[in-house]
Picture (cartoon, rainbow, N blue to C red):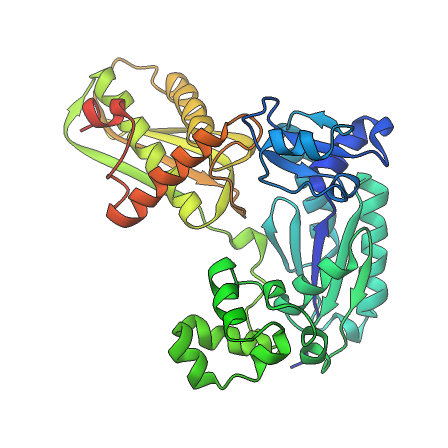
Length: 383
């Protein structure tokens, strides 16, 4: 069955949100990130990119490359709010929507072409998003998620593109192998050493050879290079939560112990978020007393996978929850409102050293388990 899949991507989202509140920033090079030279760039405008600035670049280098830019502190509260505004607009018009990240969406319009022209319908939706949110957005319409995502990059900024059914392989063929989702620095270096510089050459490598070269991922890349992708658009409402809870061997009223357990569980949940490359927009803390009464509180928060942000909110919720002087039997932490995204650290405030610290801690956890490294309070009081 012919599919119609759209990939929407909000253009330089953080910068666009900043410009909503300050029109003087329009057409100027804008760089968002930490204020100190030891911070890193979270986002930058197209005007700043002309100077060689890009995301995750040290702020010190960005200032040297583009000293005339306007430098702003990030505002995740505002970004999360505007992301939800756009989500609501899209969901009001399309039945099957996947929120892939804070600023990316996949829409499945399969079957709608019998009643509406998918091209004109998507173009009208783009106009509505711009009109009601004030945010520029680009999109590509294709037969699968892979091709639509790749084509959206060519449609930017504030543009649109359609890859007709049957033209997927031809569209991808001249592109550099690095444009293929799933090909990182290590794989692209390997392919280029073999003389494989374009997706066309990649598509011509026999599948058995790709399997020998890269294992199962090689088979998947071979299919993608030929423009094939059967992955479904997963409705946003079906995104699952991530949670951990602990039932104690003995009921307790020891606040130090309970605080340690809260830290330990929250850190584990945050690690799982980052491991799955997701962000959450809601956190819930649950308590079960010795008499089996169960209570919980939740809070909506800016999309994050940051330990410090989640811990602060978890402690705040716990303080509101624990209002009885009764023994506690169980404590739990759960995050929900999940979207795709990779935010190991706060790009707006953390230094390069903190970035490396969080990345090193996660590397240890992936290799030795989530208990391998944790805050001292979670180790000493929570165990």
